[in-house]
Image 1 (cartoon, rainbow, N blue to C red):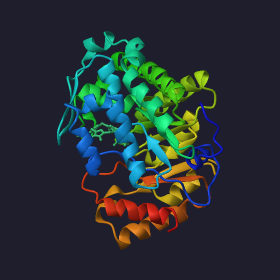
Image 2: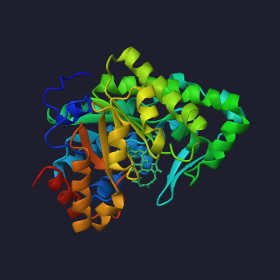
Image 3: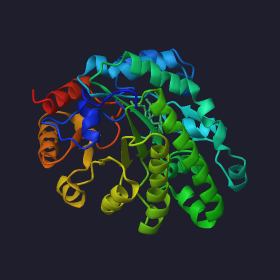
Image 4: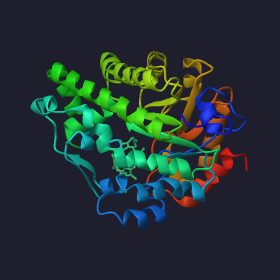
Length: 345
Ligand code: CP3
């Protein structure tokens, strides 16, 4: 970490220091709900070209901070740059989401994690450029997808409603699956360490598909690989601040927090504030957890729920966020109003 935490309220909160008002950022804060994003996006032929263009990616990373009083910038990239860097073909169909050539047992033995950091040099260049442009009180968040979530796309070839292709693959081919997880753990450690060295203050592990797993599978596919990443990153970047976001972890959140050693826990919107507050150690930071559709609808219901969340986590370090990514239909005025509420205006 290249800067002291003193002036960064969001970083301080990740490190366990409660603030009088929660700092705020928005999951997927750079994206299609912003006209300036759509304009920059049109300059790149494909979505991945945008991710690998440091000039354009820096621009879209900074856009939401020009418009709103946010406490953090999140690197503009995607969780699927790792499969791309591993040599699996990744494409994004407009309006349909990611498409990959599904990976089979044979494909796994050919994957090599060593080249990933080199292949992602343009993303690391974006981290450095954003860091240089960011005001000192703003936190720069880097990220990667957690191995299980990334594997669901690599095996299924696309986003799936219940992750059945990857769940079945893990049960039928445990050795090949373990080899895939090893590659993803190694690649993620190297990539996150490189993000810290390029200037990230904090990183988030996106485990967006932590739901739909039984307890045994949750321990094997979610807790264990995330714990290995946290330990592996901290072996090279001592005390690296890390946020874990195991979406849908439900009754497993306390086990996840304890076994992985993350500094703060992102909560999805189905998590009751009182349940989380009781289940987690008082010093552990939480992040979340407004339903993104409340932000789409706006008005009274959004304000009431936002205040409930703030009150629900008033006794511990809390970073205000949505419980999942902002959606393209979100009116910009609603985002501005939400941030005013969090800031006490
Ligand atoms: O502002 C930010 O948060 C930073 C950028 C970011 C993107 N994706 C940009 C993006 C981040 C942190 C992600 C993470 C990501 N990507 C996740 C984890 C978070 C989550 O939402 O659960 C996942 C599962 C993905 C995979 C992915 N990428 C999907 C499923 C899609 C299609 C959905 C959609 O909204 O179209 C993407 C594409 C994507 N990633 C877009 C953006 C801005 C939209 C692409 C476009 O501009 O056309």
